Image 1: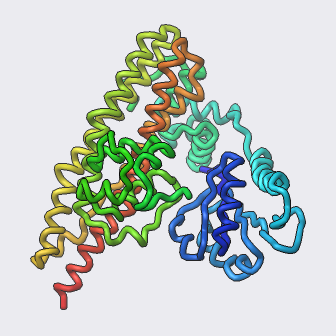
Image 2: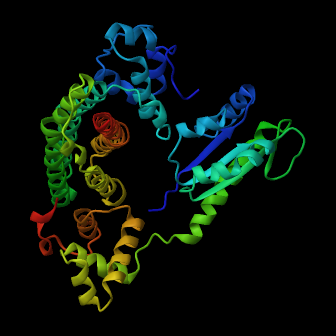
Image 3: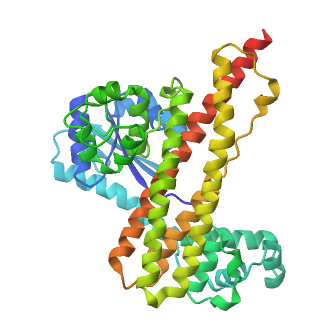
Length: 195
Length: 239
């Protein structure tokens, strides 16, 4: 299942800069992860979803391969360079205004959201509704495949997509969804199977 | 910042994250803690400060999980904590969710039929969850504690225990409660009784967070520790 969480990681050797960036990010309603040395990454081993890492150029050069290996399960990693000299869209300058820094971070976050809009259609397709109906009636994947003249593999893949779109994984949960949305009627389901 | 240390006052921590109250309770730290620090509370209650902070920070911050710092935790401490957590589920949060469920059914005649079925799902989940924790308390934990005592007193352990398998059913159980929550929050048409519905949703959110944390402690702290214990003991017996 796609993880849509956005994590903001602050990596800097200077505790003063870290404190400043922490409160700047915190004002956006996000609690950032603070990294003072590479070892600290091991305190946060399993980050999924989208990562924005605010990092000085030299630290990025030194550690990029490590960071990417460490967070290989994340969807996307975006770097914002923290710099004393340069200013650009992907660079936060130490002399820049707080508003401008916050804006750039927000832009980073919304770039992920745009990415998502292109990939996701939350509505179930008519075919997925056919599959859901049979799941709710207690059919196995093989029976669903036979009934709809599709391969078992396709049936399984439909089920995966349904669960991902709805955020519901168990058969009982899917059955109750179908009842709530009036895709099937209560009298058609075997309520003893609701677990 | 967001990670608590031994100098923090308990009251500061709770003001920052009141979801940690049940965690304090599991360690025997009761309300009325005044201005004592973590270090003082641990001394007073005979708690290993490192273990306490580890559990507190992992619970507070979903992404914080420094496995390398957990290797010195005592197995007995971990199990005591897990058993206290089970008690909280059994004595408080699951009965509370059930009570709120019944209130919803009584007060929302518009969705009655569906609520009754959802409650049925919940009751089945609850039974299964009780069975799961009972199995851990009656079967799995005693074996681990016995192993632990043997290894510490240098008694060789039988090799057949090394293929001690931990059944991982947490994620399937978690899926069930998450589904019930999503059905009620995302998909059920609005209920008449919004207050109780919100209270119910909050109770389930809290429970979900707690069991995720619980599963992480078992699967990523306790079980690796037990496996290390078994492997070390076998290695030293082979010498």
